[in-house]
Structures are given as C-alpha cells and as structure tokens.
Image (cartoon, rainbow, N blue to C red):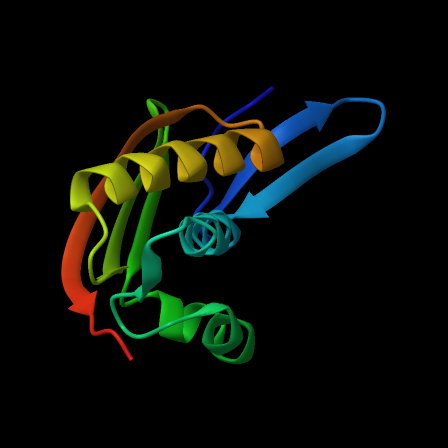
Length: 127
C-alpha cells in the first residue's frame, strides 16, 4: 500500500501492479469525518450549522468551515468543530466523536488515523 500525496490533493491509497491504483481525495476523507461526527448522540451539528442534509446539498464548500483533514505520512489528522446539544456532557460527546471519526476513516479508507481534534464551538438551545 502506498501513501504518497499527489499535487491534486488525491492520495494514492492502494496499488496493485496488475490492476492499477485507487486514489481517495482528501475531501472524501473530510466528508467521512463530518458524517461520522453527526452520527454521535449529543452532536447537534457541525460548527457552520451543517447537518447531513446541508452537507449533501453543499458538499465540501459547506463542510470546509468545520472540518479540516490532513493526510500525511504520519497518518490522517482531522480537526472538527461541532455544536453539542444542551445538557450533554461535552467530554463524553467529544470522546465518542473522536472514536467514531477514527473508526469510520480507518474502516472506509484503510488509512491510519494519527489524531482527531474536536473543538466545541457552541451549544444548541433546547427547543
């Protein structure tokens, strides 16, 4: 498995001389991280107000405010800003989000995750 970064922000992930290569764009890794964070109970949205519907409509343009991903030789480093539901334990929600994001990226891409940083940028009011 090769993990060399190309100039076009696609990273070669898998290589088989007989078949070819598979490249996964860094934006795809960011989408995986964003969706995984939104799957955690207690995460209201990403910091820019993005929920699943907004991400599916706006894609990376909307997601770029809340999710940053760096795929390097040391592994994937992800940084996400989230809004937590009022009344939830911030340390508990953050820890669950980190684990969920790490697992999703590693499972879906085969890449090692070196770091997942969470920044809580707000609390969602109760309705």
